[in-house]
Amino acid sequence: MSSLHRIQWIDQQIRAENYPNSTLIAKKFEISKRQAQRDIEYMEMSMHAPLFYVAKKRGYCYEDDTYVLPNVYITEEEQKILKYLAHRYRNHQYESSRSIRRVAHLLEHFSESGDEKVNERLPVFDVLPLTIHNMELLSHAIEECNTVYITYRNREGEKEYYICPLQMTSRYNSDYVIAYCDQQDKQLSFRLDDILHVRVTVIRFERTADMEVEIERGKSPLLQPFVAKLKLQHEVNQETWMGYRIISREGSYIDVEFYDTASFLQHLLISEWEALLSPHWLRNQLSARCHRTLASLDISTTNQDESKS
Image (cartoon, rainbow, N blue to C red; front, side, top):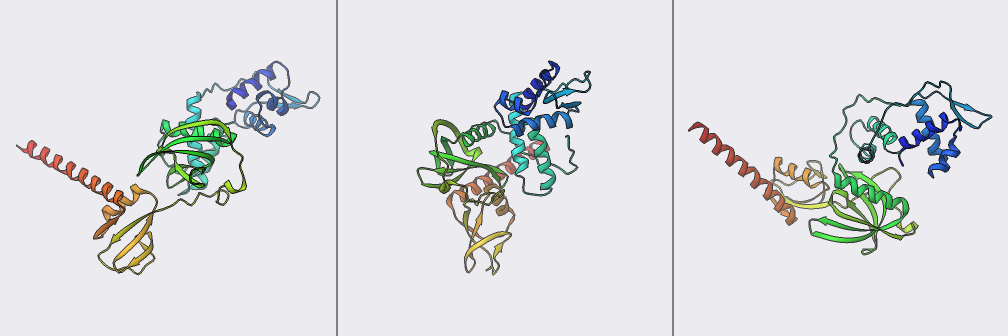
């Protein structure tokens, strides 16, 4: 149940002179006393409720009986979107990160449970229904330690995995779930928008030390990079090629690491090189993009000739 439903209940209890407190709220909604106290603080600080603690009654009342709650209503679907956006802003690792994480804190008040304004330009994230749905199911599975079946799509096609989800994270402007995979007996990262189907089972797993996320607290996981083999026009003696780390070189031939395919393809289109030798799937994607661009140019040229005639 959302914090707004709890706040409405608190308001009703106060008006009925039942003097609610954090213990009563926690028991009623099966939440922690700390969460219940945050609801009370939110009413006082953000909703400007004239709360007054009556020690004799061990609960709260209104100092001003004319106070009414602001007429704010958020649907469950909107709460899911806010929860997703809070996750994305909280994991934002680029410019203005500190200010943007304050936005995440504000969004969490609406999706989970002050009004803070941020002057920085906020990043824009795509809100995809399937991604939100997958995040909702996987987040629940992480909290309850339920095993999950997923259908996952990558460059090799579709495959089913039986996983123990451990943590949600974001990196390179994408969402991932870190999970222990039984089939491969190791920890893997799955990109959320490449998960086609999620089925949470009733089978629970025990979170052992071997399954713990192998990253420092608050940092993103080290994802396995892709490697591209290129032939350049000239030999390079640097550790990077236009910002991408070179892991091996032989004359004008280099192997470079990259994580985000779309960004690397864009980089190839504007950089100087002689040949892309591997991987084969990257060559195919680059070829398809070039063909689409050429086709668009042909259409534009035809349209111009027709307009002239």
